[in-house]
Structure formats: structure tokens, C-alpha cells
Image 1 (cartoon, rainbow, N blue to C red):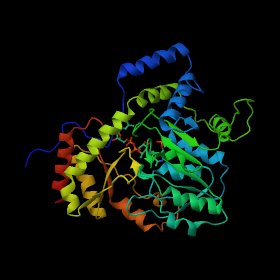
Image 2 (image 1 turned 45 degrees about the vertical axis):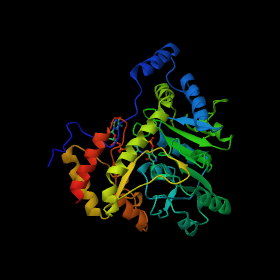
Image 3 (image 1 turned 30 degrees about the vertical axis):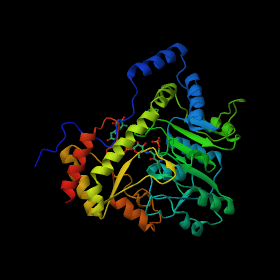
Image 4 (image 1 turned 120 degrees about the horizontal axis):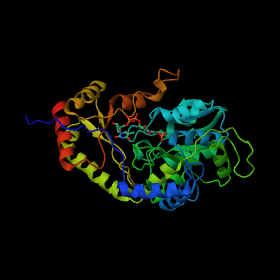
Length: 372
Ligand code: T4K
């Protein structure tokens, strides 16, 4: 058999980095301004450009996605219980728990792995204050059903849209649904500001709260502490990276699509034989090709592949394993069998811009060899 081992490690992702000269130019500006954090001019410029790019009216920027989720919860004064999904990154659940609230886990749907709205209503009690769904791997939740349930029971909706930058549903920006949506701009995301995050929201009154809470609760006009806050401000180095990466993001998503489609083509044999199932973008959705995931039939097959790939210098990741309601750090109700099955059997394969068509062909040959 031909040698399928890569000379250099193929990681699950690599960050989108612009030509270094473009960042250097912005660094010069930071040095001239002598302003490096706390509502700086580049952050404000980035905020305006981002509003335009995403076609939304209200955006607040943060040091990372996780702390913006924590601020969103504080700003809406949520109490008691929040209905959410176990199939997500630890951040979603920790944002709820760190705010003194109880996550209540509803099971997910089999096809796209998002919170299944049909499982929400039975979990609503008089303590429920919100629903916190996640647009997993960039595919949108059933936003219409979720909105109906939220309206009927007077609940807030915060979407964890960490994976969904740039996604549109029937031409509508994904962040235009719910009370608040959160984007993560972490290095590993489609669009990055090194670390970073944003809240997109409808109610303009939230701006004052967000600006205060992300700065220790200090109100921007009176400099009083009217809210319990944290430090979650975006800095100028992050904002500079964001501004520049915004010029490259459309090209980046187009390249990701090519890689995604090459994977589909090369794995079609295994898929037709029922050995794996690839997550597809939903219909009527402008997708961002944020992750390439394959679902295997059993935990053992998933583990076999996960453990064998490094022998070829290829590193997949188990996004998300285990389901969040099985974290040893907490004692949560574990009654979500679909999320458990997905979590047990899914792997994220390498997807980033430097990968060539030949790299993908080779990765797929390895997978085929190991699974046959
Ligand atoms: N909600 C959801 C649903 C999320 O997925 C996340 C974050 C959040 C909320 C919170 O948003 P942030 O506060 O992070 O903005 C990564 C990311 O750290 C995390 O942002 C992300 N989700 C999660 C799904 O994945 P790890 O532990 O997998 O990262 P790590 O360091 O193993 O990196 C993955 C691969 O990327 C490695 O193979 C190396 C490569 N890499 C990584 C970095 C940081 C690079 O090549 N260069 C780099 O600079 O968590």
C-alpha cells in the first residue's frame, strides 16, 4: 500500500491569518493612537464594519465568545432554569451555571444535532426563564418553532451562534432571531479576531447594560456601578485582526466550500455503504462550512478512527464528547439518548484553508482503509 502518512501534522483546524503586512499596518495605527483596549477607535471601526457586513443594527463586541454569553445572561436578568442542549461545547453550559442558573437539558434532533423544539415544552416549569439553543456546526436551529414556544411561555431566547458566523436563513442573517445571538471569533472559528466574541440583539436598551456589564458594571455615562459586571472588553489587537479578516472572509468561506465538497466526493463510497454519515448544510441556508463532521455507526468505530488517524499524522477532534450533561464536574440529568448517541459516534475532520485537494484525497484514503 502507498505511504499515507503526512510529513507535517494535519490538525483539525488552523486559524485564518491575513497577510502579515496588513496586520502590521494596523499595528502602526495602534502605536500612533496609544490606545490598546477599553472602547478604542479600532474596536469602534470594527463594530461599524461588522454591522454592515452582517446586515444587523446592534452589535456589542467582547474579549471572547464565552464571556459575551455570560454578559447576555446577566443583562437579561435570567433566573432559575434555562432549557438548553447537551450537544454543545462546555462554554454554553458553564455560562448558565456560572450565573447561578440551572441548565435543563432537552434532547437534540438526529439529522442536524440541534436542540429539538418538540422536546422543549415538556421541560418548562414556573422556574424557566429562557431557552438557550446552539446552532451546532453552523446549521440553524428551528428558529420559528423556538420563537413560538418562547412567545407562548414568555421566555427569553439566547442563541449560541458560536459556529454560525455569516450564516443566513432564507437570506435573513442568523443573528436576527431570538433576543440575543452570540458569535465566537476564536482562532479556531471560520472568522477570528484571535480571541473575541459579539452579541447581536434587537432591543437597543441592552447596549447600555452590555457596555456596563463588560466593564465591571461601570456605566459608560455616569461611571457608577449600577450592574454586577465582569471584565469582558475586546482589545484593539483583536479588533484590528477582525477588521482585516473581514476583508478575507468571503474568499475563505468559498475555499472552505471547495474543501467540504471534495471531502463529500471522496467519502461518497463509504457513505453509500452506510459506514459513515456526513453532516450536510440545511436547505435554504447560506452556510459557512465551519466544520466537516462524520458520524460513524458505533462508539467503537469512532474510537478506532480517532485513535488511528494520529498514526498518519492526522488529528481529528471529538466535538462534542461527552455530552455536557455527562461532565464529571456536575451532577446533571442524563436523559438525552439522541445527544449521547451523536456524541459517542461523531468526529470533526481537518478543515482549513491550507488543505489541498491532494491532502483531502489522502485523508479520505486513510479513512477508507481504516474503516473497511
Ligand atoms: N459556544 C460554542 C458552541 C463553542 O463551540 C464555543 C467555542 C463557545 C461557545 C465559546 O466561544 P469562545 O469563548 O471560545 O470564543 C476550541 C476553541 O477553543 C473554542 O473556541 C471552540 N468553541 C471549541 C469548539 O474548540 P479546543 O479545545 O478544541 O481548541 P484547541 O486548542 O485544541 O485547537 C483546535 C485545533 O486548532 C488544534 O489542533 C490546534 C489548532 N490551532 C489552535 C489554535 C488556538 C491552531 O492551529 N492555532 C491556534 O492558534 O477548543
